Every structure is written in C-alpha cells, then in structure tokens.
Length: 434
Image (cartoon, rainbow, N blue to C red):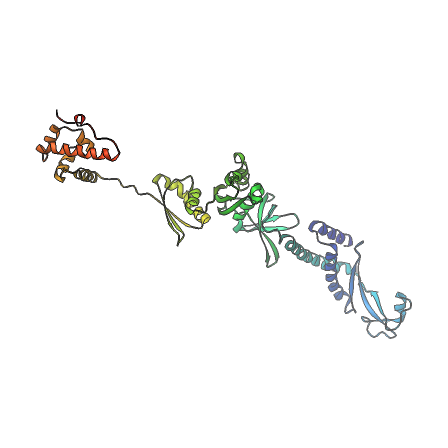
C-alpha cells in the first residue's frame, strides 16, 4: 500500500497540479477517523504519513501517572521513561499506537479521502484559473458525451459544452480537437464548471480579434453582430480612420482572413458590412445585394417598411426569412419587406386616358376626342401626322377636321415653346394644304 500510495500522490500532483502537502493533509484527516475506530478513544490521537516511504503511524498523547487508571489517557512512569528518559509525573508523552493490520483499513479510507480531496482541489483550481479567462478561446479534445452535452478535456481540467451552446449543424467525435469560447465559470451543484460555447456570437467576434490585427488594436470597431449558428452571421464594422477600409481589412487580401474564420465555423456564411449611423444606409448595406425601392421609417416604434421589386423580394428576405431576420437583429429595428405592387392598366383604362388627354387640348371637345381615339388617333403626334381628309371621314368630326388640326398644331407649338425652341415654320407643318 505504501508504494502505491506514493505513486498515486505523485500522479495527481503531476497531472492536476495539486500540491502534495494538500493531498497528504486530506489523507491524514481521513486516516485519523480510521485510527479512532481501530485504536479506540485515545487521547489527542494523530496520524503521520512518511512522505519518503509512505509509512503510516498513529500517535496518542498520554499523561505520565504513578497509577494508570485509563490506558487510553495515561502511561506509567516506567513505560514513559522507556520512551523518554527523565519523564516525570504529569508530563505528556507521545506514544505510537498504530494497531495491527491498520494498513488495510487505512488504504480504504485513504483512497476515498484522496479522490474527494482531488475533486475539491481541482474545482478550486478551476475557479481560480478560469475566472479571469471568460471571453477567451480554448482548445480541447472531446472526451465523452453526457446525453447531448459534450465534455472536453482541456489538459488539467474538464469543461462542459452544453447542448444549448452547440452548433446544430456540427457533429463531434471522441478524440476530436475543437476550439470553443469560454462563456462562463459557474458554481454548479458539484462545484465550479467551465461553460464553453461555439454558438455564441462573441465566439465569432473573438475569432476576428485573433485573425484581424486592426480589430484587436481597436482601429476597427465591431458595432454589432447577429448570428444563426451554423448558417449565417452578419457583422457590422466601422473605422474612425478614413484611411482604413473596415470591410476590406476584415475580409483580407483575396478574402484570406474571413476564409480562415469561415473554415473554423465549418463553412458558416459570414457577411461583413459597413456600419452607418443613418438607418436607411445601414439597412441597405445589411440587405445587399438586394436592391431596395423605398423606405418608410417610423422612429417612434423603430420599424422600417421596405418596398422592393418583385424579382428582388426573395433575395431581400433570404432563405426562410433569414436575411431579413438577421438584419433586424443587427440593426435593432423591426424590418418589414414587401414587393412593390405594379398595376397593369386595362384596355378600357388606356382608352379613357387617351380621350382625357386629347380632350384637354383647347379646341377639341370630349365627343370629338372620343371619336378620334376610337379611330386610332390616340396621341397628339397621331393628329399631327394625319391630314384633313383622314379626319373628315371620321363621324362626329367631319367638317370640323380643319379646326381640330389647327388646335393640334397650336398645342404642339405651346409644347415646343416650353422647352425653349422657336415655333415651327407654318409652311413646313405636316398636313397643311397648299
């Protein structure tokens, strides 16, 4: 037991970094309980472990007395002087009281106490070491699964990747090495626990800080981030330095920087967009490459209604509404996207508009305009290209043809004068008889 005991102490000291004195102290406490049961009610009983050879001994403090009434508390002068020459009545003498076969009993108690103390000491070290590492990225290997939770081996310690912090599109294998974000160090029912995450948006932010020096030194500021883990992330960036392109710096030359991050995220799509204090510009950037037609902004309710062309609707909303949803999370505004309604005019409506247009020309009545339109002359240009004979053959126009042509030419001259051109030469007008 002695050799095994020393080997166990050395193993745990090396593997877990727990001080040997702490472990020995824990075992001594356990062995004291074992010794009290084996020895009996000895006075001031203590247990000593020799750290060189692993020997375990029990000692009791006895009072030197000329007459021994209780052997658990007293020792005769004769026996005392064999242990300590010159001992006098009333002195305290420490005597070894290790019972026969105590090693077997001690072994059981020592094992239980050692494992309990190791767990306590390990958890204390976890809290001490990791309480200041929240927000860091750590690397560990998958040790085992507890239902849907993943237990990672970080070397000296184990950490928990809960199911809620996993990326739904990722599957892990025992022994696989993965990187995670230290989300919290919590006091659980069994002591401190290191809580890891791969789904937290801050994991992506930390990756950019590690990959992009301009983000790490504060030249580029990450203004906002919205993420649907495993599928898509939108991140808004801004730089106060006009010489630094925040999007270009994050993407990197030939996209290398963002490719490294996408690879770590198992091909999750990452959109890096320029932040703007103007909500219209910000949302336009967030919904790109979709082309937006119009905005209706309600500052009070922080709601934006956007109209897009019919062929841009699916692009703006995204697959299963993801693009619009992430834009809303990123900007903090409610975003409603609708297709612009294009009204197609019917034949009757077009005829009515043409009649109204011709009837608006001074000198042409509504009845005449109606007759002209139904004869195929729907525009002012049509009248100018017609001659008097053509108009005379139209019922309800007849002899009024010359007057209508004159009214049409006058209207054309008014249009020409509006744009700053001289009136046309009367002799060159279309349809004038010589």
